[in-house]
Amino acid sequence: MPPRYRISEGLLAAAAFLALALVATYPLALSWRTALPAGAGDLWQNYWNFWWWKQCLLQGTQPLHSPLLFHPTGTDLIFHTHSPLNQALAMPVNLLFGQAAAYNFCLIFALTLTGLGTYLLAREITGDRPSALIAGLVFATFPNLVEQTLEHLNLFSVQFIPFALLYLVRWASSHQRSDALRLGTCFGLTALCGWHLGLKLALVCAPALAWICWRQRPAVGSLVRQGGWAAGLALLIVLPFLLPLVGAIVGGAEYQVKPPVHRGIDASFLLTPPYGNPLFAGAVADRYLDRAYHAAGFVCYLGFLPLGLAALGTWRRWRQAWPWLVLFASGLVLALGTDPYWDGARLEVGFLPFALLREIPLLESLRVANRFMLVAGLGLAVLAGLGWSSLRGVPWWTTALAAVLIFAEYSWLPFPVRTVNQSPLLANLSGGSGAVLDIPFHQRSRTVHNMAAQTVHGRPIGGGYLATYPPAVERRIAEEPALATLAGVPPPDAKVDVARLRELGFRAVVIHKYRADSFGQTSQREADPSDILEWKRVRILGGIPDATIAAIRKQLDAALGGAASEDRLIAVYLL
Image: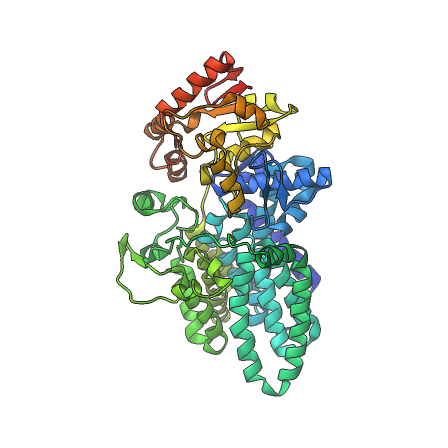
């Protein structure tokens, strides 16, 4: 085992990976208070989460129930995706500078610690600083991880996983309880970043621990005791947020698992650079435009130089490399999902391991196969570090050159950002009493736009976009005619019962004009298809026929004498 590292080495490495994170996300840092990564869906759910947790802190309430969504009843948020550790870490930034700054803080923090943790892990394995730098660079800029930063706070926050494996490696050789407790701490912190990440880390650690105990049978009693302490510490860390989940499940909740989706990777894109890469964008944009699904996770490029180094490390340092090769290969195979694709065509494969996860309690929640690319990425990073360490005696400048070439392969520059823009008319609603009914509302993932608007006006709204929906809130909408007729995509003859809406406590109706089909169609005609993220964004605009919008507005005009205010994006009616 290499010697423990000096604090100065860790600080220098942390500074280097902070600089790398800022460069890899340029120009985000220049507008970190007013802009976000250019996501279009779950990004706004995470943006709302930061706003909601801040409201809870300021008002002294707990965040697992919200009276501000699904008015007039409110809703439980027990199974909603919160990423509580990120909420806590970013709260000072959130209070001082707002939700966008909080999200961007978490992004830079995650990428920096991801690089540092992978550096320390590879340093432990290889004993070589340049090789550790290569490994940290590979995982911190891994294209699938960078794409997840556009949407999924709970998925790109992988920073404690390399640290967990570092302490697992140390514990396997030292048998020190302190290393086991550090492993347990990192496991708990990972789970508080995202329950799915905790489950993935458990999938990695469980077979590794079984192997360690088998290989070191004379010490198995000590290992089991120390492992129990580690598990107890991890449980203690997650207990405040785990107890409500367990309580809800024991109480009969059956909505904690979302339906499975078919989003495995297209294996031909393992060798296709990201569409945002400045060197290859022109050559690969059409492939992504034709085949990529909207949700983040499609990018799965491995990189030719990292793959070459990984192959070299596997060949020359097999005894150290094989566990990381297993990790890399397992992540790739699981990322294929149950329906593997090559160049857009489905392959006829009788069975893939991902299908097993759907049959195992708890693991069934790992329903999106492409997210296992993050596991593959960490295995690839360590293998690449081992490959570089096998090149003994190379001059320092070759490490710098290799780092530049890897970054050139992986980079997404300029990093896509989007200014947080809401209609200024929404601010006029702030401070008022009563709830806001958005049209359209209760439209599943598209409802996230209504939640983003709520962060401006701060009033209760009639729906919400949750990770999972309590059946009770959907049932209440279905049983209330004044809401049921306007939910989802209303028919052109939908009746707007203004009197009943008033009785339910609604005091404003906001027509989201940019959700009309014609607005979406116009946006698509005006968009540049080569800007794939913008093309994805405008393709999900619309969602409600113009005739329906016109019919609803006609009824509101007759009942209320016209809109109180209106601009290009929204029309506001006061009840």
